Image (cartoon, rainbow over all chains, first blue to last red; front, side, top):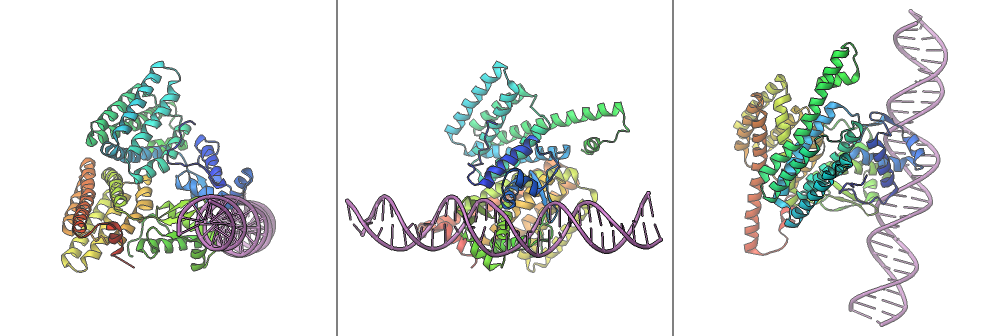
Length: 247
Length: 247
DNA sequence: GTTGCTATTATTGTCGACAATAATAGCGTT
DNA sequence: AACGCTATTATTGTCGACAATAATAGCAAC
């Protein structure tokens, strides 16, 4: 976990620290997706009172990692194909606009800094060594830089402060290490170029296409998965199958 | 307050009820924008303990009506011109995409229901009686319907669950009763037509233009305001703007 | 054996008190 | 009078206990 969320400032209170720990546990799947959360149990595990645990839970709810119902309790959000696709759709809208704003609002220094970053990523990629990991980190870095470059607090808060925890969760749990490495890299380069040209229209279009490509890639994979399952045996009505078909 | 936020379900716990009350007070400006929140004071005013007040504050923070800092406290979010414009930008992205998805995912019944609603709005507008109020309600109804029509939980939660409280706050505090009544109505009609045609591309474009028009309208008004103020004398442009509405 | 009600248990919501941190007031020095 | 330090006060963070609600187990009737 090198890449740090740029909107998350240093945890000072114990509720903050526990929040980060639980967040990590949920993202990594140590606390399973969809499972119920027992306040007394978690409070005991982290050696804190229920009050401060509830404070941490509130923060988890804010970034959509858990869902609470009155008088019933909290559950870790359930990962699903539909949820993943909905997340992509939302990202496409928000990051597309962020990219447009970045083309308009980024300072020249910010842009050249991002161009430098791209060169480093290029070298790293040339090495073909640990590509998946660095590519993943680099991918996040790139998107963060663009979003911050929008200079729009609302967009930054929504994407970095809320959505990206869910994104990381899906990445971990569905094991998605973008296999479109070199293609994605070229797309990044094009986006940065559009930003440098101050062409907001183009920048938004490219970013949306970039994210939509990932989404369609997933959709294709899902379609294949369904086809494979169908040839084996159709009678096997798994939860997964049902969810796949609905999308 | 006829129009009820469609994502906000009935308040069952006392923290929920107090949350709604404070939310209302903030939106209406009874608790001034930018003011510090004293936990002991508010707890006493609403006759509840600090714990349940803090629960309510967490919910207020979730819909971006207050901001908290560790060991320092909470402040009501500060309304500003930049904040308003950023909000419009974000809405343009999210509602534009929601509209595209609505064209794709709305059922025929939903669409015809929305067309009926439009007819009612048309009649109401013909009466030219209490236009501002009904137009405002109708405007919200329209946008809610489109957003819900996207059938995308992520988008619905972000827009209806979070952004729209801020939108209402700005509407109240800046006293914005859309003066573009008849124009906006025609735009609504066009959007619904695009959705009925299942033309997502067009639907998104029209919705974005619809929201951007409002934004540009504001920007123009602000520009005039500044010009006027400049001729008189400097300083306190924003403060005056905010204060002139309510007490 | 299943269904429906009741009693018990467990979990969540709320409360008041204490601890830790920040804001303020008072004082002394320059 | 202005600055900086210390002591006091006020506010926020954390805790454990109680109240209200939901989940469960046990029993009765069919």
